[in-house]
Length: 108
Image (tube, rainbow, N blue to C red; front, side, top):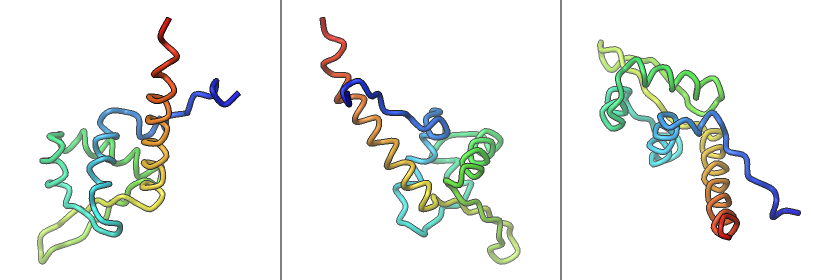
């Protein structure tokens, strides 16, 4: 029966841009954050596009966006929450299960 079960992929993470965001943030140590412009550069995304995807991830509780100041300069810091780390781990496990389970099912 478990052979028929297809793992569910988290739709919040599954969108390509959000997967790239979460994947990048997962490389940070827990509790660390990255400046918005740096994340934007790494992902090669426009500020508007990145903001939209961060909002969706923030609404799901997967990322935290903190607006602060470094001296007199405004700064936006982004980090992956514990919930986001667990969701990403579940997502990657589901993808692995799909790939491992799918390896023999499509052959005729």
